[in-house]
Length: 221
View 1 (tube, one colour):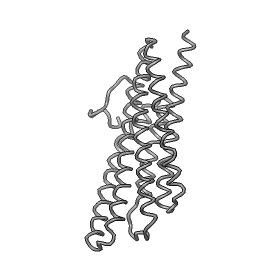
View 2 (view 1 turned 90 degrees about the vertical axis):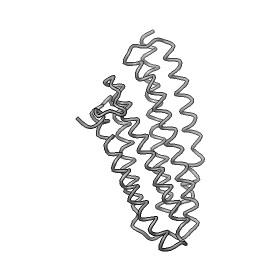
View 3 (view 1 turned 45 degrees about the horizontal axis):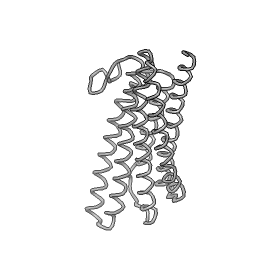
View 4 (view 1 turned 60 degrees about the horizontal axis):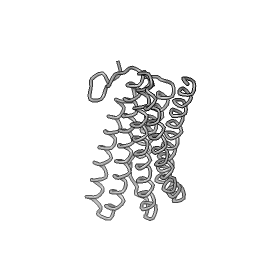
């Protein structure tokens, strides 16, 4: 009986990781659709949004079934947190779809010549997501903790980008549509970083039974 339960927990964890990999891929492709002006990639991201949604439903069902079997404390934390993590991953998928839709609008217009560094912001955000998922699979709270303060770097880049784009709109009203779409892309990346931060915090909770949300201990120690 215990062996069967352990296998179900392992399957739950693997489903989370598969979902996480898919969500990460969707964000990466959506950003490529923006930077490479690739409508085909944008359309692919939009088509695949339902896959991430289905993963969330499947993981919730697996978690509910496992909760009914009265797991030990360590497994109980994983099962409870699995539903939270899958929700964050589903929202990351939604943000990827938003970026993809904005990409198709941007690709229909001339490129905006600027120093707006969407790729840098995307690279940092994706690195945060990758590290939080690796911390989950390897049970490494020490890898999860450094993810959390990096969220402020993404926030700062987003503010910097907003300032620059607002300046463009003031100087050249013809750029307003493109600037607003780029601001929406950056906002989606900021939200992805927020979700990566949430996942990292949940990893610490799974491994250490310590809730570091809204707490000073969430910083690297």
